[in-house]
Amino acid sequence: MRNTLLRTRVLAPALAALVLVAAPRAQAADLYGKPLRGLTAVPVADVVASPAKYAAKAVRVEGKNAGAAGKPALREGDALLPIVTDGSFDLPASLAGGTLAAEGKARATDAGAVFVATGLEVRR
Image (cartoon, rainbow, N blue to C red; front, side, top):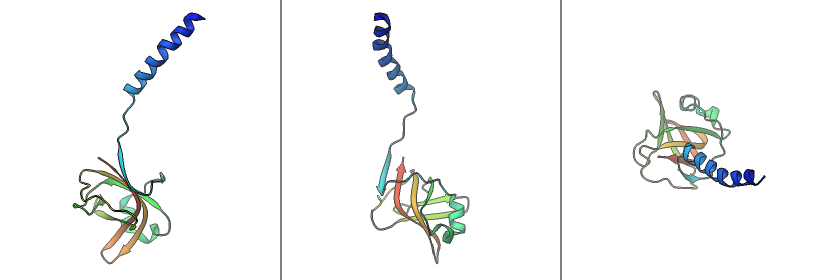
C-alpha cells in the first residue's frame, strides 16, 4: 500500500507535466465585442450570394482576413465579405495576417453583402 501511495505521489505530477508539454497549445485570440457563442460557420460564398437569407438570425463566418488596413473582410473564391461592427465596439486598425471568426448578421447593400458583427475573434 505504501508503494502504491508513493508511486501515485511521484508519478501523477510527472504524468500531468508530460501531458501539458505534449498537448497542442491553444492559440490566443483577441476578442472584440460580445463573446462568440460557438455557432457553426456558414461559408462566406453563401452569405455573399444570399445575404437576405442570413439577415434574420445570427450566424458565424470565419477565415483569413483579406481586407485592407482598418477594413476587415473574408474571401472565399471570388466572394468578398466586408466585416463591420454593430457599433458597440471598435476594431484595431490592423488585422493583417489574422484569422477572423465573427458572429452577427448579413446585410445587403448597393455594393453587395456586408457582415455586421456583434463579436469578432482574431487569431494571429
